[in-house]
Amino acid sequence: MWRHVTAALVISLFSIKAWANNAEEIIVTAQTRAYYAADDMDDDAPRIPAITLRRTADFVIRTVQVVSDTRDKAKRSEEIYQTLKNTIELADQGRSISIAIGDTVVEALDLKNYKKAVLKAMYNKTDTDFVSILLKTPLQTSHQDAKTVLDDFDNFIKKVKVSGRAELIPVGDMALSVVNPEQYRYEIIKLIAADAEKTTAFMGTGYAVEIDGISQPVRWALSGLTELQLYIPYSLRVVPR
Image 1 (spheres, rainbow, N blue to C red):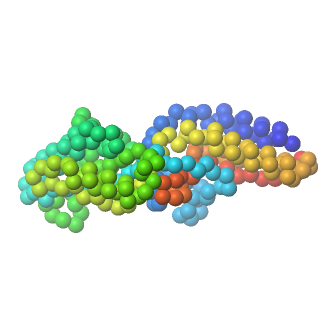
Image 2 (spheres, rainbow, N blue to C red; image 1 turned 60 degrees about the vertical axis):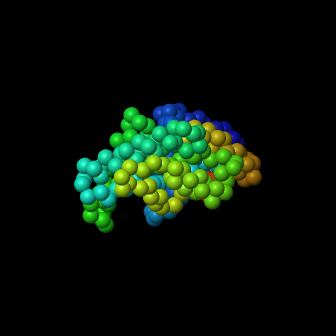
C-alpha cells in the first residue's frame, strides 16, 4: 500500500534538485510570512498544510534608519555614509551583531560594499535623507527573551559614533531570518511521508494516498516569538486502489 506514495515521492525528488542550492538568508515577518505564497493563494493568507517543520530561527533582525537633516545635500550624504561606516566598524569589533541590508533576502554589508545601502529622501520631511540597514544577531538560548535582544540592539546603537547631525533610528518590529530554507526540504518530506504511511495504514489495504505539490519550494511562516514553521504546500488525497 505504500508503493503508490513512494513512487510519487521519488518522481518529485528528481524534479526539485534545482532548489537545493539556494543558500539565501530570508527575512520572515508577520507581513512577509510566505515568500512564495502569491502563486497559489485566493486571499491574503497562505495555505499552511497539516505537516510542517517547526524550528528556531537563525537570526533576530532589527531595521534601523541612518538619518541626517543637514541642510546641504552633499554634506547630508557624507554624514549618513560616515555614520554607516562607523556602525560597520563597531560591529566588526564584536561577534554578536552584524550589519546587512534587504527587504526579503539579507545581504551582508562591509566597508567595501556599504554604499549598496541606497540613500533615500524622507518622504514627510524636507532636507532629510536616510539609508535603511539591518542589525542582526544570532538567535541563541540567551536571546529567547525579546527584551534582551532589543536591549542589545539599543546598547549597540548608543555606542555608534555619529557624524554631524546623523542619527540611528530603529523602525518597525523585530523580524526573524532563516538561512537557506531549502536545506530543510528532505526533513519536511520525511515528515510528510511518515504521515502518509500512517494514513494508508489507518485506511486499510483497499486504499492508497496520492501526494501533489511536493516539488514546490519550501515556504515559511512565523509560529511564535522566535519559532518558524517551514513547509511545502502539498496536498494529500486518499483514493481506492
